[in-house]
Each structure stands twice: as C-alpha cells, then as structure tokens.
Length: 116
Image (cartoon, rainbow, N blue to C red):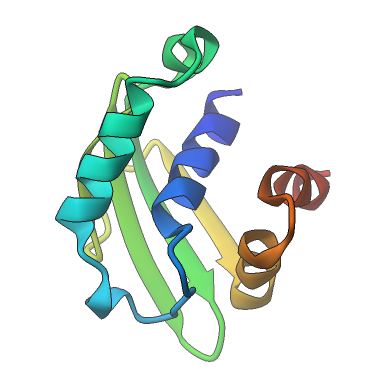
C-alpha cells in the first residue's frame, strides 16, 4: 500500500498542465510547496499510510528521464533530477503509460488498471 501511495505522490508532482520528458522547466520548489500544503488536507488514512521514502522514478521513452523524490511522513523533502542513493522504491514507466495515466479522465483508475 505504501508503494501505491508513493506512486500517487509522483503522480501529484507530475500532474502539471503538460507532461514533458524534460523536467528542466519544472519549478520543483513550487511543486513541493503546493503538494505539502495539499497534504495537510489529505484524509487521515493517507497521512497514516504515507511514509518516508527515497523514490527514484524513470520515464522510459526515446530517452530516459529521471526524477527523484524524497519524502518524510508523506511530505516531500526534495525533488531532483539526480537519482538518490539507496532508494527505497524504484519505479520505471514508459512514456506512453505515463501519458495515458495523466491524460485519462480518471488518473487513479488508470493507475489501478496499469498495476494489475
């Protein structure tokens, strides 16, 4: 369950107006602040389950794009394009799958379908 919550954290970070294989235009500080402020309003079950993770995330397409997210008690401590050492979770997804999930009418359902 924690791994699904961690993946949802990544989806929240990436759920910006446009998916790009290049994160150079992303304002990671703003994304972190917005996410952490929203986390305060999350249901208690999410706060209970969300944990401390070191997540390395890769979108694999024509080229591979890396993103790392470090969380503590569900809140984001850092977001970077530099992989973390000793990650607790490594997620690899194709660019096609990520685009499908983020552009679907119901990203959570699309995520659940892709995990089956």
